[in-house]
Image (tube, rainbow, N blue to C red; front, side):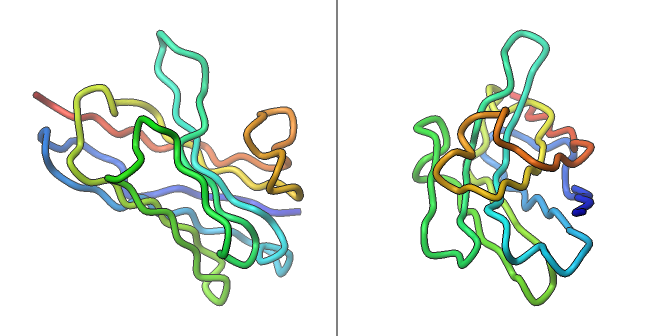
Length: 124
């Protein structure tokens, strides 16, 4: 069992930066691939970035590629998402997710655990 708690969301001006954190409980955290999804009322939840258990394999959605960094610290049971050059279209609830299968984490059906979400609002 893994419990995930996100933090770091908030209101930021366009062009600014945020670092989202996701703290996981349980000794199994390091065995899971981790990901960040986001969702708005108008769109289905989408995968933003993912990282495998060891941190060697990373994926970014085209929408954030080049201006975001996902990382993890297994000693602290924490995964991070740094978002730079934020745009109003980045406004969403961001969810942390854990999956036992990195290659399948793109699908919500393969997510084993979800965090409660943290709101990111980017003002223009």
